[in-house]
Image (cartoon, rainbow, N blue to C red; front, side):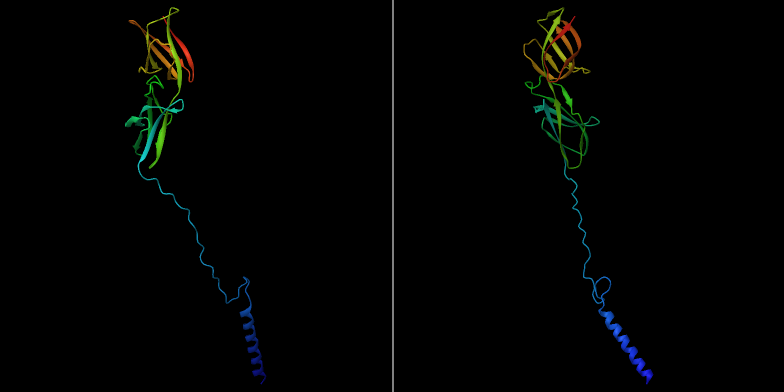
Length: 217
């Protein structure tokens, strides 16, 4: 009888422990019968910009004292190959790469000489890119005279050439007018009848207005 009573007591103890543990919350605050309902975390990706497509283009402008001017332009490869030529403002279709832009002013009321200048920097073009390149000219307003033996020469003709170049960019004859020329350093070939005398070291400062006597022997 004692053995039966002891078995009953043990069974009651086990049943009580099981009931209390099923209702007891775990350390996370959830009962053992609950499960988490949270879904997977979503990660948003930054949008990727598409690579530029289509042809690349380069437009060349001619500028005189900061203002657009009529002119003629050329676009060359860095090795000197001609890509295209046309009027200022022309847009050239090109392959990606590096180029050199050149231009000269064609309006003689704006600039009297025919000097051709190159853009200061190379033009570097990426696929599908559209760029512009400016050819900059700065002017000097000049009135020339020729003096020989301390006396003014009445009849003369002067050919102006940029220093280091054999190309004549402007011919000047006696006049009282001040003409707009590309600022810089020049040499001059002075014609007086059948006599020709070369003079170097003529300097026309940017933005200046000067009367410059060319002295010959």
